[in-house]
Length: 498
Image (cartoon, rainbow, N blue to C red):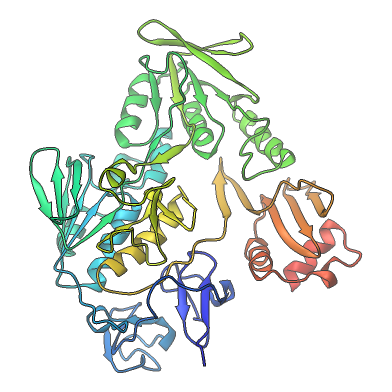
């Protein structure tokens, strides 16, 4: 009999066994967010453990199966995970002596923490180009707005790394990967040896190839250093143009507006967040942007950045000029795959990895923005964190599968809750859509069906239906009974009750 596998639809973790878990050991998602999984893994069979670690209190219990309840804290058996020192996968595996993690974003830090839990005696080194302790990149716009102080940015205090025996090398730039010698050559002339290497190199901002893009006071927001540069140039009344109407662009615009700047946002598409939202939803979000006193211009095609040494304005292809003393570029990111490519690893849009997040070199893993799994590079916080955890455990001797994360977005933009999943841009007459706008609270619901099955959805404001909509899409459930004679409001009520 072949054991069933279960996929966590939130983080992509695969649980091997005859029944689902009460909650996911990677992201803590509930059992309702697991679905049966039958895709073949490219990696060996699931690990067999003879010791188990309690995810709640870290107590270690011996045996071929976890105890019915933790003898220390009392949680149920489903809150145990195989303990690192006893994992087997058919071939004998052991924790590596030396693990090096290149990159200290959330993927790198999550990998370091997971590797330490999995391999208590391993030497773990985390290297970062930045001078600061690893920090929450997601909070940079809040810091930019003055909502939080700088001391709240670090993910962990310095003492945490000491307690976990994780060496953090700051201001350290990786220059070359010598796979044959298992060595990393650093820019300062030093080198590091590794048994297992985890590439968590992140991404860099895309700066469009527009004339004048190298002028002073044109900044792409990615790091704390970028924040400092923006703050040094932004005072009350500063004329600022933000290029890009995605999440980062809108959050940056709001932050600068709160600082007293006069902000204009230029978006090249016809509405905001065109990949996640349809036009109606994008225009609802645009109304929120304008309520904040931010000027917004869509279908804005930039011809050049005017000025001499410093930028003085943004000129469109139509000839319109938007005066600016500061320009912030928020046009997306691209994975830092150059070093992996130079080392001869397989690279497509990102560093190609298998279900264990291994690259084409079995001693090198890739996680986060730089990784490409099953043709997908995610470029967002949550997948980076989940991949980091699974990749770190696997580099340290475990054998966990990552199946990929369903393409959904749960966002909070300008204090507005958004949810988007699946096909939200029907391209022919075979789709049936339901749309409703809450007159009292301004909430918006948009559901897309094809052949009685839900294939896409957008929620704005009230996102309480998000998990149920996600389940309907992931399980490919037939919705004939739900659809019968339903209006948009009735349909949502039926889904909520299902």
